[in-house]
Every structure is written in C-alpha cells, then in structure tokens.
Length: 161
Image (cartoon, rainbow, N blue to C red):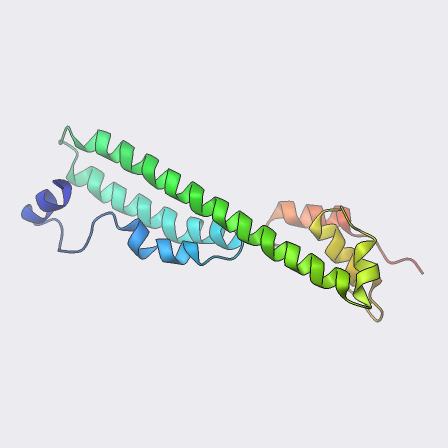
C-alpha cells in the first residue's frame, strides 16, 4: 500500500505494478507440463526478473526502515508460491508418465518390451525399449545436464545378439 505510491511520487516508478510475479509470470509457470519445464522457466524467467526488481528496490529503498522486513516477507511468500507451482508441475509430470506407461504397456508390439523393465527408472526403461525395438541400431541421447548423461551411460546396455 505504501511502497508503490512512494516510488511513483519519487519519480522512480511508472504506473505498472512493482512486484507482479503472479500476474505476469504465474500463468506461464502454471501452464508448464513437467517439472523440467517449470525448472527451466524458474531459472530463466522468474529468477532473473525477481533478482532484478529486488536489486532496483534495494537501491531505491536502502534507507527505508520498513523495506527490509517487507522484502523478507515478500521473498518468503514468493518462495511459498513457487513451491506450490513446483509441486503442481511434479504432479502433472507424474500423471503424464502414468498415461505414457499405460499406453506403452497396452501397445501390442511395444507392451511386452516395455513391461520387462517395469520398476526401473524411466531413463533405463526408455533406453531398453529403444534398444529392444526391431530395426533400431543406434540410439543418440540428448541430455540437459552432466548428471543426465552419466545416468544414461550407466543405463545404456549394448543390445545382445
């Protein structure tokens, strides 16, 4: 109630909202379908935007006694909001994997191949399915992180003749 008007009166802010994370970026985060999408959006959109706005406000409000407690409450609230969205993204991703598992298990040709690796991590199951599929002679992996590459290397097994 006071931060925005003070900044506007001081000529430091136009009429737009100052801390509008939920209205601008919230819909983007809510539309993510997997945890990986959410994580990417958080690292590339939310984090930089939030750090930039807070840095500007830190400079503008440096001498205001009310700013540090407000900033602390705001950062905590944003953290709670992002945790809820992160949890939603995980649930969506899990639901998509469940649908995929049902679809693959029910497939006449792929079902038996896919079912034999039940209970193993998804990366291993996917590689096993690919290697076991007729006509597949090469599987090229595209990974986002060193940890994923290492997990893929551990999971990779050359097809047996």
